[in-house]
Image (tube, helix red, strand yellow):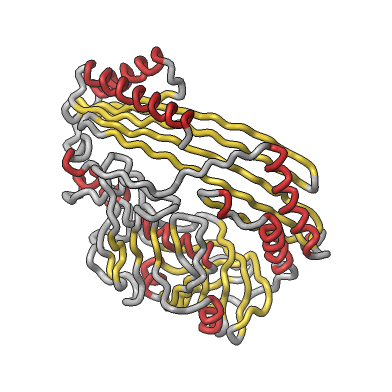
Length: 450
């Protein structure tokens, strides 16, 4: 971290402490303050021409106060002292008029993080707009030149950003986080007329040297777009479904939503009272690793300052815990798991199979490469989403398919997972390979499933 950044962090820390002092000076029994400062550059090109160049610089302050167990919150994007004072006053005024909530309050003081390792998350990219434009143009050009069937570009974008944040509370806790993220992506269109197909590819990382080469991104986007040309219909039926790694990530997200504290205490989850029950096959496990080097969500503390730790979410198919912050834990009569603000880095263990092995295991069925729509009921677990991908015959990709629907229930889908691939998609805090579900209902074009 350079000297200028250190000065920004120091100034933000002082602002957070001053805001806390104002809260306590106004009579609050407890208080917490979050302060963030984000900067970034984004450029976009299309068909060899520059479309956008955007600089961003955002900051914000949020304040939460507790008068007994009455809570008030307020926020501002203006960090001038007068605005900070007004924000504290609004939070205090709100708290005085709210009902007392037995679960309200800071996380317990003894759970605050005490150690703050360096997870190697800070890698600013000192790139000028003309350099960013050149990289985006190279990705687009490589994609357009990769195959004669590429008809036009949907654009290429390079984005780089850095984020600083401070969390402080009246337990005396002050936590500082700083991270960067950079991405380069390209979208292309293949074919013409009503037969046009679109696809894209992107690469993102915390350090710029970890991003894929522009030419590789463009060529992969082209291959994916061309591969979708001339889709055929599918006969409705029950088949094995293989979710390509990027699409498989959504299945894990549905699990996270179902085991989050907010859904559970509102009784809006199909996984109520499911801890220590067998939800998945024995070979299926998920480990949360919040201290992973260069992990997208590596952190020593959660959004309440609670120390994070590595632990199993699913072990040998058994759900071991929920994802809880202090409020949801109190509502459920449990203890926080250090997940205020969500899950940190998750690693889904593979079952020893490569992608080709899983494809062979499909036999005849569906490979899903893209999912559309929001057809998931979090209360019942009913699942029905639009999809596109490829039909598989004799364990090999036969032809592309689109405008289809895949359906089932998440609980049954979880039980029916028969393989997780080694082809991990690293572009998220959820690391998973492709996931094979032994049987789902697949409806062809124009057919609707209730």
